[in-house]
Length: 428
Picture 1 (cartoon, rainbow, N blue to C red):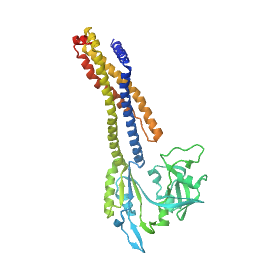
Picture 2: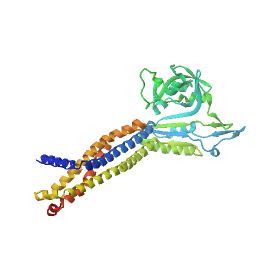
Picture 3: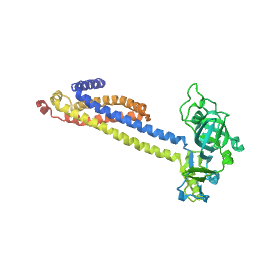
Picture 4: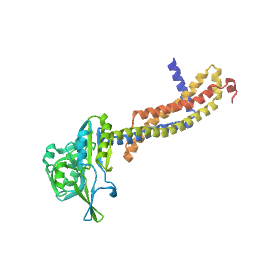
């Protein structure tokens, strides 16, 4: 019996609203725009935060990244020789040695030197970044082996003149040639290509193309020992009519901990070692885990702000619902009086008008959810801005639209129920 009664009330609500099609349609439109705004804004915020988090995750939540930083000229150590200045700064082999001995729960330590040099194969050349590093760099930096192999421990021990090139650089220098086992010049030295790599997060391979056809990696990786034996730690920068000699032992050190829980403790040990080894702060410390946690908190606040802004449009839609229902109550005063005279209770009147507001808010909410799917997809298609639709955004948007309908429909419904039946019957 209750189901039949509810069905009858809903049918009556739809019939009453159909008498004011234009007014009801405009009211529903406000709810539709509000729900669309909530879903679209939350999807844009979610997309942006996930993109940032993925980039941080690529750096590893168990890693601590250290980088040499060149300070302003007046703060650098060094001397003046024949009009040329020697700048000495950054991370040292001693730093790496101390980290390997005293950092607790250390799984691996990956040092690297980074310089920009011209690389050449036949008549093609390009200036790119050379990374002199160790065999486990590929795993730490999430590199994908597309062809051949990465630097091996044997290459390190023997100081072998081998290199691994990025996929984009392989396409630029070697074109249709298979780069594996080809000799290429790196600066003034000759290295044999043993592998091609790309970022693990790059697009998948294309059909009927060489494996190195995909990826944006342009760096060249060489064994650290090989580079140091051939070039040492000193390099020269040219510019402004003068040359600057710089001595940097290590440009980067990546420490990987066995467990994520030990990262913050290890980071404090690293800071203490660097403070004792350096008389000035010519280094940077980056802890991805700390950044990930900060990003998660920022993401939460960002979604709250965006959702709140979008919810304002739903409140405006709710005001529209209240407006139409107050007008309806005024126009149907005599009808309310007749129903009360025939035995309808106050709660029956409240139910009737609340159901009408729910019909408006639910129908607007459902149509708005459809628009909330289309708008983010359109934004991504037209602007390449990443958007992510989540079930939570749909639940929040639809839930708020229904809540708005109930809250803003409650006052007109109670006003109708509290009318005096005699006065209502006298109303013309």
